Length: 304
Ligand SMILES: CC(C)(COP(=O)(O)OP(=O)(O)OC[C@H]1O[C@@H](n2cnc3c(N)ncnc32)[C@H](O)[C@@H]1OP(=O)(O)O)[C@@H](O)C(=O)NCCC(=O)NCCS
Image (cartoon, rainbow, N blue to C red):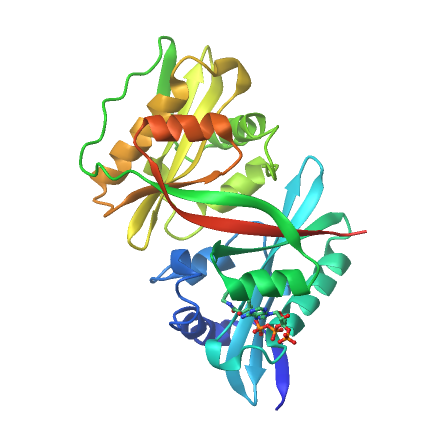
């Protein structure tokens, strides 16, 4: 058996698309199914062509891995996303892929302090694989869904708050980026955003400017909600309120706006993903009728 690793050259995108839709990989990579799924990974501001690999076994496509390197206040962390088709598993291909990815992250992002793996659980193969490579449990993220579909609640904006949809201007990029950073400053793996990273996010295929709402109070951006249409579901993808505007009902109003927008787009299900230890967000989501339907585990390994 020969195993070769190659890069995701543009001419090989169809190979990757076929691997992603293989029945043994599609459930884990469900959010990347459909016509623009792969394009979203390729356009991600925190990844790049030097952080993506394909694996071939005896010349046949067998797996892939890409890495995101995400800056936070405590230094960067890298999320590795390997996948190996069922027929080629337990032959060391997944290990080759993440070892190659880890070496590239160390070389290209020497400031990176942590490597992570993730999978929907239960997944004995992902858990066994993570343990075998010295990764330990770090967190659960919960996928929550609002079963009362078709009954978007009324939105009541707190007094003094004005809202506008994202218009792509420099002002909006700056406001969104700053509100994001201030909202997630204390959070686990809170990414550090910049106007440039937000501009790149807004250029990702399928991004809907009208699905982003910015909330202002006395001229400052104090909250935001970004929605995303995924295959088979619509997601309230990020929602944040800056510390000084918490406790006045703005998070609830933004969430309700997000649910209403997604229902208006005829999303068949309305979901969101939340850090399972973010008690404040969890109680808001539960009180708005969201229920946990799936869990995603994060495993982590420190880098020296
Ligand atoms: C997880 C995954 C990438 C592993 O790929 P792979 O090529 O089979 O991995 P390897 O052959 O390099 O396995 C290395 C070690 O991981 C552990 N491992 C892998 N699969 C396992 C399983 N089903 N149960 C328990 N341990 C397992 C073993 O220790 C294995 O070594 P061994 O075969 O000598 O016992 C693959 O199963 C996969 O693509 N799963 C679906 C996608 C996914 O979950 N991706 C996220 C991964 S964190």
